[in-house]
Image (cartoon, rainbow, N blue to C red; front, top):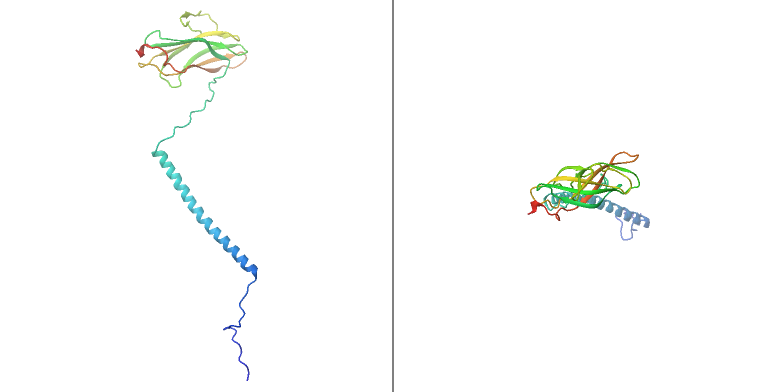
Length: 212
């Protein structure tokens, strides 16, 4: 009698388990980690974009509806330049010839090494407040002292010329209202230019008829 054949499909206790080489397990683990990382990265990227967009929208709304932060002070561009051959020197007087007018009288000195001619001057008012009526070079007077109308505006190094700026006063007390002067000048061998001189940072310390 022929012995029955062993059922290879059924196996049994004497069936050898299937064994894989060790490197197969390592490769499988690495692949699983890479797939997991890719899925997490994709998910985080989408959420991050949504969060960023939401944050931007929230910030814009807060900026529009909430307290506004004042912008930084403008940077001084230097035009007209504060640096140059001229400087305000000597006496500076503020007078009120009439109750509704003001005159600022001062001296301009050539502090540079070359000859300079003062062509004209005009008022510059950083915050307004006054109504300029014109400048004179040379001035007709300086702090109550008359000035010779023939005084030259061509200045050698170290020379001075009295000048003045006129203003119409406002109805209220003119303070603070800083006052500056833009002086048109030309140096020997150069083209005309403009230099700004800071004269008065605050008119609050002066006595005006409108303050009484």
